[in-house]
Image (cartoon, rainbow, N blue to C red):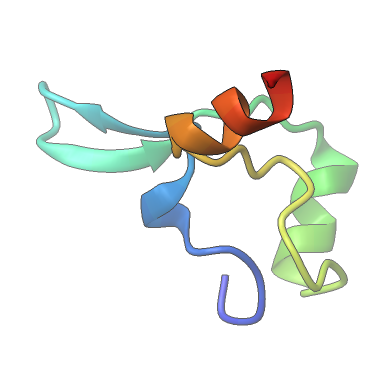
Length: 60
């Protein structure tokens, strides 16, 4: 997403070895998908950082 979080640093952005491409692995319903296509979200509501250090800091 241009204004939101970069997909490359999201836990939901996975690599498919069969297709040799990256995909967003979030199960969305038709309404959510329509909102994405209409750009009604400024940031991805499904973003999960793949930075393990952020998680560890919250646990301390």
